[in-house]
Amino acid sequence: MWTDDLIKGKILHKLTRQGKFEHSHTAIENLTKGFPPDLRGRAKDMSKELIREGILYLKKTNYGTQISINLEKKEKIMGYINEFLKME
Image (cartoon, rainbow, N blue to C red; front, top):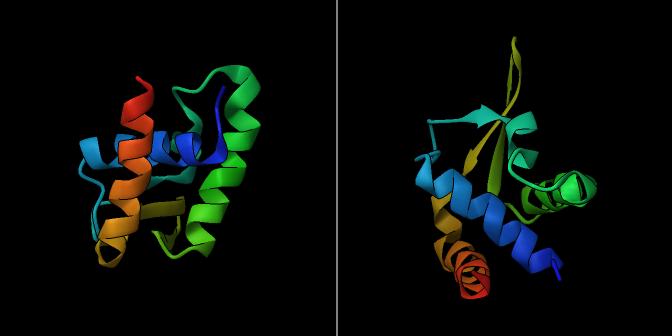
C-alpha cells in the first residue's frame, strides 16, 4: 500500500539519483513518470506538497516549470527516501 510518505520518498529518490540538486533541474511533469497510472494523481499532489514543505524548489522558465531539490532540507529528504527504500 502506497502511503503519502512512500510516494514522496520515491519522487525524492528519483531526483537524487538523477542529481537534480540546486541548479540542476527537471520538468515538474517528469515527477509522475515511473508511477502506476492509478497513483499518478497522488504523486502529483505529493510533489506539490513537497514544494509547500520547501523540499523542492520551483523555477519558472520560458519552457515550463522546473524543479530541483533544496539541500538545506537534507534530513527530511533522507527520512522520506529511507522510508521508501525500506518498502522495496
